[in-house]
Image (cartoon, rainbow over all chains, first blue to last red; front, side, top):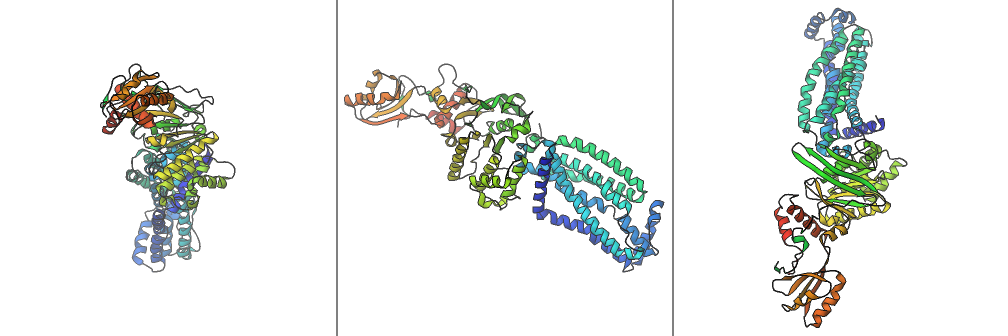
Length: 274
Length: 362
């Protein structure tokens, strides 16, 4: 594997993405919605506006959480405990939905897009190996989603600590489970999804078909990732390590298989049916 | 054309009398071969793109792959770089199999495809920078990018997004990209596609210039005028196979081994006298007997013939040596391939061309 080629392919794809305002502006809005706007509205309504109905409803929901999760909840008041539970447990899917959506959008068109624009011909004749092109495309699809998540995670941390912190005795976020979720559990789910999406992108005949097919693949994966990430947050510290380990194993297997999906014939658009 | 064929018909308008003149010359270039494609076949489903194709590309020369759309030219280029694997036959580039030594072969090749294959969202500079990094250009990368752009007159637009380039600018940028890494083999697939005549002429001049330093060039085209004067070697393709291959002059000699002169007098019958003259192999008279196509052993016989006719009282109105063009050769080859059953029926334009050949004295 020539990592210089991998880096070059990835860097060029990212450079094109940065130049595509029509892509990243909607994605930035999506990230802002999930990481800032929705949490801010919900948390502020509980802590500052004293929305009694919301507090009562969420307090009921807290009672059905696993004992390990309930033990972690901090705060002396209902509003404090409720806002803490929301901040730590409710927004787990945020960390999954946003990167999967962004990376899938990038990854689904990355190979079929080369073919449609005719630039696949250039890559097919270049010295870069098919596996190097695959890895470059994978990185270029992974980085926007994961980077958005990390930036959003940072912004979300500041938000919840500012809004909820005074209610629970100071800054509390990110918790250990959130660190594990962001750094250990979420990346393999993202890579697993991308391994499937890139395979689809290499095989379909148009970008539109790639988007359709990718949606079908990622929806169930979002469900699985959501349930597993929630479990990682609810469970004891070690549970997220096990969930992450299994996810990494499956992701690496799928990535290895996915590497075979990119051939020069597919970049040229002549090997789809042969 | 009105002709009264009394002895021989022009070579291009008749079926071969003996063995076919089709086939590819084996090249014995002293420098050796950069590319040797031998008996290669490749299909895509039901479509047979290559069908026993043989191409030899001598080092340091320009080889033109000539053929109509769908002849297999682009697929041939793709097998040369190893982008496509042949189903049958062998490909050797720089003496190695590009499927086994792909990175090495491709890093020594520069390609311009029919579609310039540029990234529209990137600037011209970043397109070249991408290629420079993929091909691992060594030394002063920035200087080499600028030099390549200047060579093709596109340096003024390097900071602009390629999406705003004209077709000519894109072609120039693609050409610049192809030479960035000083390749030993340049593969051009319809490099003048979509260009105006002036730009196309400039591009062809640059291609010729590039062979001056020993670079080997393979160029695909279906424009006969582009190949004329540019090609050191021609391979005519159709249906995925090579119909004929060799140096243009050798191929012309294969079809027109004798010198041909068109001559016309103002008096019917006067021209009959040349038949018995030394060096005249055959004549083809027009119906009104005022003109003839003479096949001579040497074109230098022409002054003697003119002098003899004049001495006999004939008033000569036209003397024109016939020098077969590449276009003449192209249609002669296709006519013979059709007669041999190698390719299918002619499109209307080809039929017209092949029946209106060199014997037309009108």
